[in-house]
Length: 271
Image (cartoon, rainbow, N blue to C red; front, side):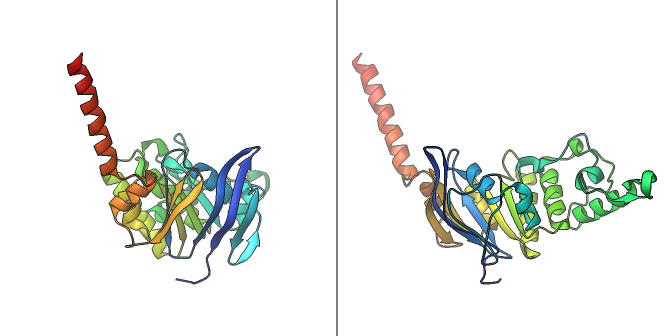
């Protein structure tokens, strides 16, 4: 693993008018590393993703790639530098075939001039091979509709597509949310394969167990700020869960719930 981060944020802030959303964010991810960004709903994960992928520009602070300052004025700028963002369910098109969806916007063609047309056979062959290289052997027909794939297979297809088109940084937005155990496990295997191939992976999730299964480096986001930054093995599942809850332990919460219930019972008995 290289010591120089592929992608880095240094003291990044993001405001929308008078509303501060991100506060002094510093993060880095290296080739062959999975950075897990953990946070509950409303923690600022969506704004952070959009800032990393060029949808939003930082209000202040710096973005760096390979140690050099960069600025992404639009998503295409981030894509051109090798940053691929995969949203929940892979951003695929249910009514498209696997081959067509794999190449949407960059379709291979055959023929020439006015006779040029989409090369369906080539697209299908490349798409199927790319996905099977990630161990998804059930996909063997590029003409199958995306809508017939499971959520895990769609995620895997989107990740394979990003790698095929030269991604160096893979941003995964809640890739295992709403998936069953078997599908989520497959997505986690694909994440590990992307890491093995040298990609820098930013894995955004609120599911601690999934993060611990693949993560090398962890950051907990609370109300737009980094509340903790640590390496694999430095914190337990319970400690991470407590951090995501704002530092209030689950046992404290359970004790408070029990006390509230006892109070309600006492009031009911007095009545």
